[in-house]
Length: 333
Length: 169
Image (tube, rainbow over all chains, first blue to last red; front, side, top):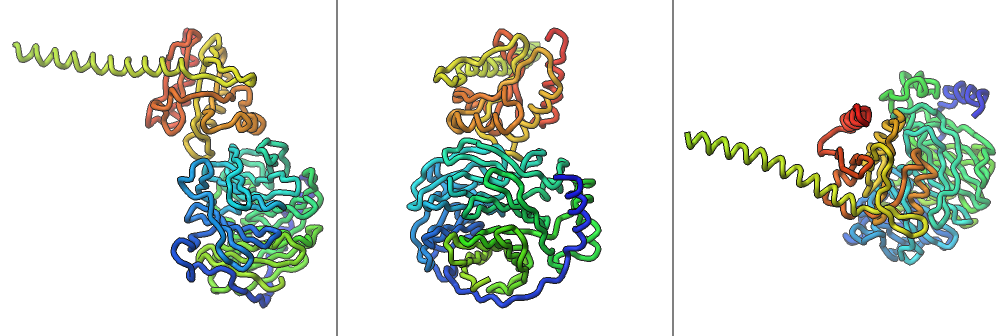
């Protein structure tokens, strides 16, 4: 990143904390764990992906399995269960650990092992490969190249790309802070999603920035969004800068902003889901077009949730409540 | 007097027994090390290659950052940064859990690429500590040092550095 860009980001830090307007979003229940028999209940589901067909795949973290539902929420299959041999998945943690490609192959990043597992749409295990770092998200492009965001204290790139067969291809993406240390590590955690043209969008978990990369990994744009004011107390604001993070990489400061998930619709509109029930909508260029707060179906604070846009042209979005194991389809965002 | 003699004999036997037991275990480990093989790209399997000085061998049955195996990798990195003269580092990843492609990926992503190989470490399975084991062989393949349980990575690095820097190496 150029020095000028770094300075711009530092000075912007305090300017992007503001109140976010509320929006009325309606949620239609698609899958409610509380109404399912025991075997079908989701337990702390961590991640969700929606295929072109409308089928929904959920990384059911507490049960260490993937659950496949149809678009109406009907249970179709489960796979990757614990003790199922080489195809067993362990846990997703708080990571966006599932992706689906155009042919509905399912990609799981298991940060516990750590490895990537690939299944077909029927849940048949295809292959797996190991990676030497923990991962915070996985996405796949139309060439079935697999993009992983690395969670590592090493001063290395943000994005690692592997072929479908598991061969390491390339890495790219400059870290926000290059210092070693726990805080620096947290600040560099990112989530990523590919659009239909194989561009890659990257959002940082605790820094209000969206980057757009070309399919080859060239940085195309950087756009900031607003940090909801209620997330940051007045006393915390002076610490919330890249300059502070770089100077205090081992500080115990816990960044209050959390970007839970990033998703791109078939039409190219992007969505970030932040904590405090806040959504950032961005254009195919990466420019932020809208930001709002919504009232969650159960109106809980700090519920860990994911927002997933379908890969179809129709901009359907789904919300996953990881605590209750409920999935909702959201009205137009 | 006979009582004292019996006590002395028992103590001596106990001490000798312990010593023999430790030596025996070490000897068994040395034998097991000789059964470890490295997978070559040609498909051949060869014994652990020995350097002119000490060969530091770490076998990995698993690898996970933040876990003992990942921490061990960092220890070896730190050790290697000391540029230990005359010694060779070899990191063997179990072919049960790591494909040849996995190891190639690791070599492309992590430091110490020249030290990483895939191999059959099954003979060492009973000796693994937290899914890994570090041993040091001399140029004749004799086991001169081995990792012990409950030793911190910092201590281990200290012991290893002392050994490598000891006179006679």
